[in-house]
Length: 410
Image (tube, rainbow, N blue to C red):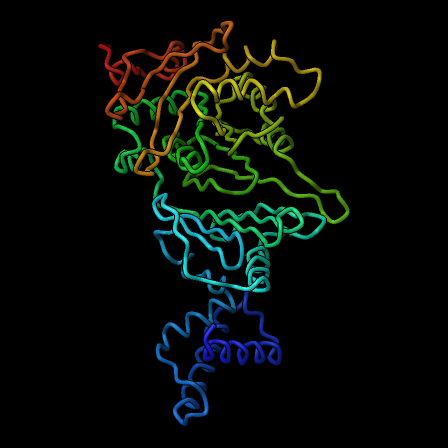
């Protein structure tokens, strides 16, 4: 931090304390105080009493970011090309642009990192301390924050911010970006309109949440959509949507709200479609029961392939208790999931659809059988296999015909 920035920041903070100003509730006051103190500093620097300011606009921005924003990290929050920001240590700070990682020339102190994290958490109602060394929260702009502190980490706070992007809101936009073909996008649009249960799978950073949002943009405006997530990530531009997130336990160890609880509550809210942002544990059982009862739904899951996603979804419900066994879970997955959309990172680090498969509803010795509908060929192009969804009834009930899209004559 330069001398002018530090001096002006100290002056503004002194005035905030003396005038009892709440900068977070009154951001205009912060702007006014910084502008006034910047002018006073500039006037004094003309006499040689203080170091000169070489760039008043930049100094103004740095002081304001230190007071109401995220300090030295604020420029990376403001940079639309930065997708993710993470700190392994105060002097090991990285960002990702278009999937490419770069280390930035920035060094903070441990105290500065703590102050920035505390400011991020102010509006979330969540905390991080020795009794709760992890925190997962949504920032006011929709970005996702994850923090881990010692002694879980070796020495420094580990901070990760996955920035929220509003640029991709439809399957059409994903086509424009090369993530999938117009043919595959049209098939997925028909699948959503038909009320198919869709599982979106892929590794970390492959765009699963983005795909969920794009799929839901194809839903009918009359649908009531209920979303449940660990922390808010989905941002739907729909007329009838309710979003819910989990809540951590309080200092007394009570008040926790889990994904399992949210799914059960969501079913009491008259949903036309239930969406689980990401399935990780026993909540998969509650989701499967809802889907198996005729409730259209979507979810995402970490997996290496579409088939692995079906295997994993058949395994996670076993975590719900000893009275749950695979003889119930596997056939339920086979009958409940209609479409699996698997995503991957391309060699150029772009995010794209790797394959789209449809479970047949049957179970074989090696697991749930499925029909590949779209796959990547030897040249890396996403092409239709010519296979039709093995269970076309939902399309027929909705008055839709996927055959022309797939490549079959109607």
